[in-house]
Image 1 (cartoon, rainbow, N blue to C red):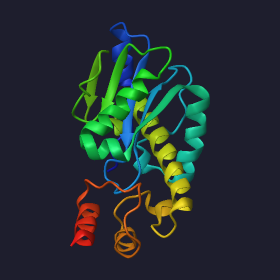
Image 2: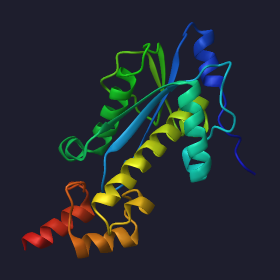
Image 3: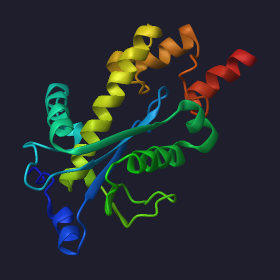
Image 4: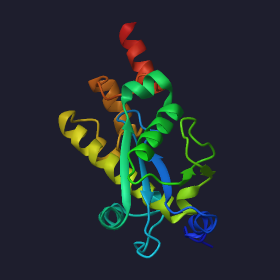
Length: 209
């Protein structure tokens, strides 16, 4: 039996408690060996929610692209990133939270309640916020944020793939697929690879030896 998809109940509860602008926040790109981590913050209009929102991982690429356009047209959206250098200097969790903090800060007007995907609220937030485990499958605004973040990051990786052919980033989005790992071994490490991630670190270490 399929679990029911996300709904608007968490947002509605915050609105009933006095919030007027509830933002869903999600990030994508913790697992890849290359590229930034990307976060999105989305405030849906309760009277104009695009149909079919769901966890971005449960949607086809074509459906994500169509929903991305609808979300951008009908909701308040902001997107932000943390760079490979920030990932390597901070660690991936802190960098993911930094990207979230940046996306929230860029949202105008400012939201007054945040639904954060995951089990931790980023340390740097001053707004009321709740962590929602598996939130992209529970809250429509987090699902919308997951779609925006995923489509945006996938497009970045397609662009980077044209500058650094051979790693298959247009297909694997920088994740450690077999072909990506073998390309790393054959072609070496690019400036877009995360040096703090073990497969990349190991290749750099072998090159030093």
